[in-house]
Image 1 (cartoon, rainbow, N blue to C red):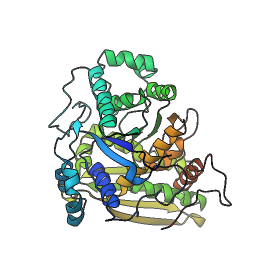
Image 2 (image 1 turned 90 degrees about the vertical axis):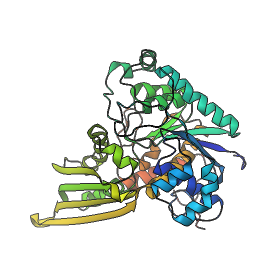
Image 3 (image 1 turned 45 degrees about the horizontal axis):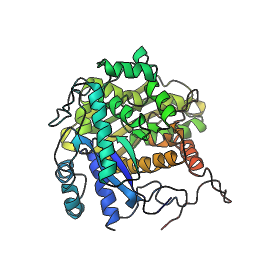
Image 4 (image 1 turned 135 degrees about the vertical axis):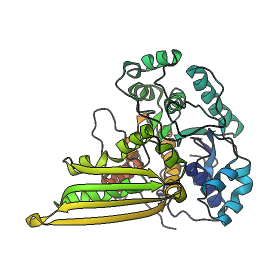
Length: 408
């Protein structure tokens, strides 16, 4: 891979907290103002991943403010960090986004695409991607969905069964096709890699899974695994392997950013709860009867999320025990690096000629996608092993099985 190649990262939700943190973070890294702590693949060398300074960002949002103003409103960056990148962020404004209030009631847009039909919206997205690639002189483009969580959709409906039925539904302006599906289709139909970092229904529609194989578009999702679920998928295998029976697991979250505001809508919140609750039973091998997951929007907290877990277990001689875990974190500081690494790994998959679901990227998601007929793996350690094995494909093995990790 040529060192001067450039990769475009087109983000749905460019003005959000996660996206502005990713853009600012890469600019700070480029200027030498920060190091690579928090970037999971920064010390994996020699496997063909593009360098961080090869990334160029653009994308869509329902709010038209420049990224400097958006980043200041989200209050994730320190004042010194924001000041250092303000000139760059001020020059960046999102493109008009596809919008449908039926799918995300609590986010009211200030700008949206004026296209009247679903087909027109899809074409406008494809035109944006083509213009982005041309204007920025990019070699390739990846699309990442960071938009607010949409309500759920019944994936078993016939219009979602095949690429042909999906396209007929597009032509008919089907009311069950939401914005996330439009972005996924617009990318996939042109063979562009697509990652869904949200719980919304996007590329996981059966029709789009089939289309991705047909066009050679690598896809991955869904719902980024950043905080509470990350720790759950680390702890649960340990409890299982020590034969400690989980009687109950109570998880609650409070957050006050735009994501929290979107999740204050019951339909959007349920979609998020479904992805957060999916992993535990799969890892343990039995149903935890009292597995409770709650999300509360609490405006004063902003991007500073708090996740609290109470875990009841029974051990040897039937003795009850408890674990209590309190994780106070900045949501976007955990999520933004994963977005960057997803762009790099999906681009690698594209250059390798891999299309469809890239299940080796499951470690990045709460509800990972898998190849047809294959079980989903949730345990973090095994997911990480699979990622490292996938990254190593095609190179002469060293004495260790995992890729060389260079510490600098």
